[in-house]
Length: 388
Image 1 (spheres, rainbow, N blue to C red):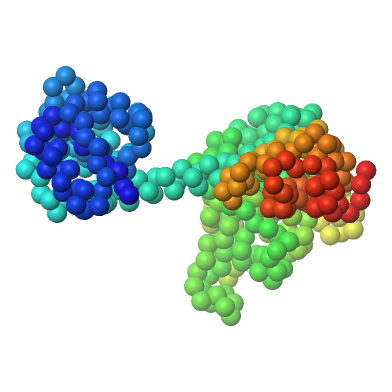
Image 2 (cartoon, helix red, strand yellow):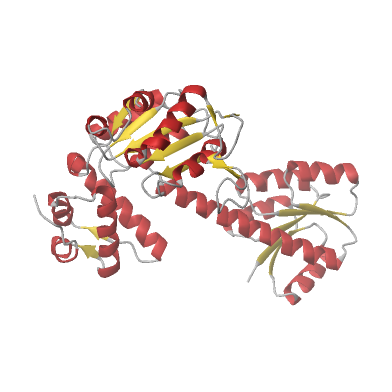
């Protein structure tokens, strides 16, 4: 049941609103003055707050200012003494809406419903932001991770191109995202392209776009990822799997800061920072003539190598506890903990799938175990390929 707080020094107004709102299925609390209202708002969670403007001791505008500092519950201002200037001032300060007395019942109920929808959207947005923040959190205090953080702090504010190397599942994308988040382009887009997942005949269309009719299925014009990332960061993941033809066009784009759509006839300027990643040894790929040496040198202004999980085994306790907390929260399960011998068992595993594999194992343990997770549980459910 939605909960509403009504702040008004007139008892008759509070009584009338209580009768109306409870009839409509809302639960209502009331406050005769600003101080009482602030005390209630500090203790209880409300879906909407209705606040009178003209009140003794503390007027509604001051109450509004304090409420907005406390939380983001939508506040609807009501007054029988207001004017356009008062309404505009209230809205500018952050009020959801302003309704003049005598109150129009239909408008009041519609405003409350709309304010509640806005409040729900804000809550959903906060949840999503927390999830995104947790997803891209960089966990670890080992020496290799500290070195990577230091490198990110130095490199991110520049527009230098970065080549990130490391095995599958080590967190190369995470490094790329942090380079973007700490850059001067953080307000711009972050566009990721998995070069290994796109067929060779489509990669040029994906990267550079195409004009309508340039090939059989090109039924309309499409902007490529270089254009979509303009003003931000383009992350070319698994670039070692890109075809030589596409490599040549990427090299031109990096050299000239402009691209041409497939089937197009004019150059299009782009302003994009390119970060690339690969699990391959590109020097060996160059010797095999699978990768262009000139593109390698364009991409590798800065090299960041992400270590395997076994090379940073001292981070496993932090990672395992982070994952178990995150998984239990997302699944609505009581929090599970690891015994010391369980952590030691996790550290003894050879993690061929690195952090990605560790997270999968922790999720499996979270589903199948209760209370504390022991070394026996790890032995039973982790099923490592081999042990160190």
